[in-house]
Image (tube, rainbow, N blue to C red; front, side, top):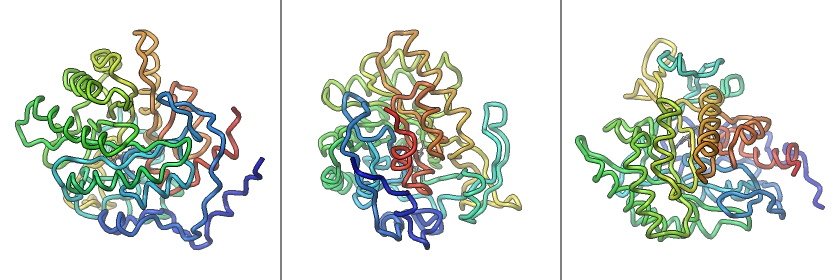
Length: 373
Ligand SMILES: Cc1cc2nc3c(=O)[nH]c(=O)nc-3n(C[C@H](O)[C@H](O)[C@H](O)COP(=O)(O)O)c2cc1C
């Protein structure tokens, strides 16, 4: 058996708070790659003790769609020992990122609940505030390179996948105002087919982005049971071997969640959530902190209450209705101790985004301290 070293061994003394420089543009950050001063990675596990979507995996922790974009980033998280790494959401039509900065730290020390969703939150650009609040806001608007570029990149990214790991890709639709359900379905399926042909092993429809400034309908597609049922059915007809699911945001009720999951039926291999929660986030004096946006997606610790409520509902609905989807649960996991709480609430695998930027050794720490299987 390999002796596992203290996680500190892999962290340089001058390592900044985030592997992502929140003061730079998304395009620059993607190009420069993760800031990992030590250049050291823990040894990958040889044991595949976890199962998700029929595959045996080395870790029950995934990197949500978002933190990793292009090979330099997906390779980084594969080397860190995550079981599944998603490429950030892709589109069929290129889109630039919202204006930088795209991330700020939210000074929130209580959970977001359905009752306080309308509160105004204060954010700062002080990286060190993360240590106290473990909460951030992000607003990218699902930027995407052109389809010929990201499909070629995915094929290269696939080469970085180790034994007991999977590469996923998230896709969304680009909708003009007044777009119909048919427009959305066509665009989603075009993107999904391109990703599937490029070699992704898990396909996720992102139907819940809270930050698309041009057309907010893009963030609410997950509530539309007809759209969800249609895209999953048509995808599975063409790519029966590739597991697929969709990302949800805050459902209006358990009943609404049930309606959507039941409509999708057996074509739904997994459900993924929760996406960042759209809220008003401003600077100390009420000024915009992310330029041009007064609302943005809140993620990190404050999402725990709503995220766990959704995992519980998804797990109950699966049992009540005899459905077979698996649950990729996340939103709010910031410490290694959170992982088991999400798994015991009903998640089959968990996912992290904000914490992946601040605590990339999370999968290793779980293996070291909590792995009791
Ligand atoms: C830097 C960053 C980028 C994100 N980009 C995407 C994205 O492209 N697609 C998506 O579905 N979710 C995106 N998200 C949302 C996350 O996948 C996740 O659902 C949300 O942040 C809640 O999880 P967390 O509390 O672990 O951060 C992003 C989140 C972060 C922090």
